[in-house]
Image (cartoon, rainbow, N blue to C red; front, side):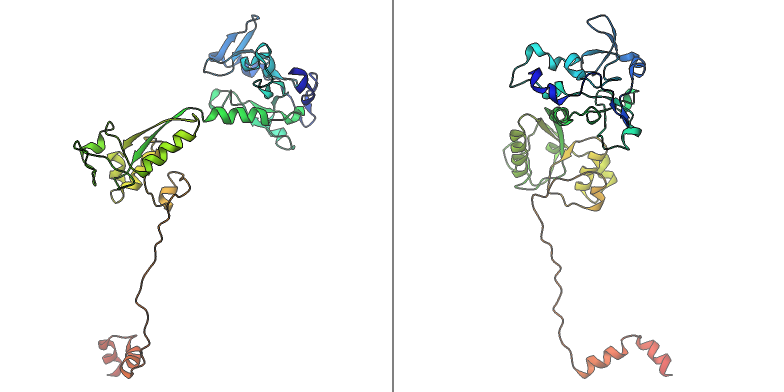
Length: 301
């Protein structure tokens, strides 16, 4: 597989484009002492990710355009390679660059997902400056960013047949009672079936959705709307999403994003049809309408 992709990478001696050169970030990686490690060859190294990531030497990604992952990423172990499952990004060359300089060129630059903003390191990389393509690596990030998530969803209120619970006798409840605050009593309804189908077709991206109640604190903040209170819980971090027939309002949009509407409410304003009034009394009253009877008396007198 290596020879198949070698033509897509730049020579190992390349140091990137003139206006977007590769940088030596060895010292910056060495400063992250909480992620220090020793490589299998005995060199000082850096743990690439905090979830039991590989230990790479401190010169990982520095100074030259190389397929750095081919050597240090366990997923790029050539002994495990087959034509069907070997990651294409392994053969793509890249290096760390200066984001300010590269932003003035047409080279695409990305912050390292291994070293995010709160990691203590400012590390940005570019495949373009090494005449490589970023798409293979970005597809891996996109795939891994959603895998097997568990979602907590609150329910603002009951609405048959969309959302409801049953009592101990199996009777559908129209209004919430004590069972509303008991998460062991399952929800039923059209919306629950819809969300269950989303979980099923997500192919494992959504591991599970658990349902809970809206908080009383948010109800106190929005006493006129249980639905706005449920959205407040999302902004407060108490729930990941809310399931229910919501109106999308400006106030709620400031707190949370919404899915594409599933149902549209057609609302119309009905007023009496104006009638033509040509009687002398009506036309006279229009002339007198600007002032009250008392004011007309003052004017006349």
